[in-house]
Length: 381
Image (cartoon, rainbow, N blue to C red):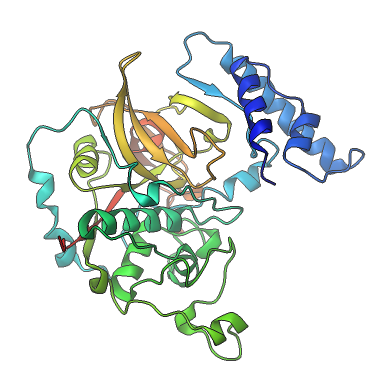
């Protein structure tokens, strides 16, 4: 259901004029198959009209920092939208090598002045905006994206990492952020899987937006014919492509994240993304200080809007290039750790492992400072 370029331009023009399209136009544009007399049509129309009214009210505010616009998510139900946001960043992966991780944290002690802006949008992995579909694989997409970015930065040779393998193989015994695979896991768990087991390239195990059997545990009786005929060949460990460790940055602190972006590369971050579905453009400031962090994305840079002086993080999402600003969102950036903090009062909706219900503090717009993960590579240059 990919819209034509001309139709997409019409929607953008309508959004700029604050005249959002009717539901009938939306259905035609996105090639929905709802029958007009069905209960589903009525349900989807009610959702769309409700969101349209909210967007028009938001866009009428002359002080707004961002613009709401129609996209392919506007007729999705709340459970369908939640399927995009299964993520936990509250707990480190079990069995991770603390020594391997800590020895790399010296860059955080650096006090050198940071540049006003830094972007990694020139990387090959930033040119391809992934679409996770209806699979809650945001955590796997985020991990894959930052691994690809750091390989290119530190070796000079682009390499892909199979999101599908991470979905199929990453264990989640504590049910952190979900039940594993398309039902949610963590960026930390994905990093630890790659650190210990390596990872196939995307072409060897393409993304299907669905769960599956891990190639390393497939047997002749249960493997698919394609995997039987062409078994997935992959690196035995992360060392073969230069990965030496990974770390979770100090929680809810501004300087570690901005320094990692300035000096290391893209960073996997967490965010409360329940209000993002209507984002079209601008610097998003639509999250309150209290936020339920439930989505994994990639911080690809930070900058300043020189027309209004507003600082922002550039976040690469996994909802396709036809969402937001070519697949990305700019989040308002508060350059002090205590500048925008609140509580996550319902952590089991997105960030906690099974049984963990105690509220946790979150900082940054949409809780973006809550959890940040960065890999480390040995340069071969």
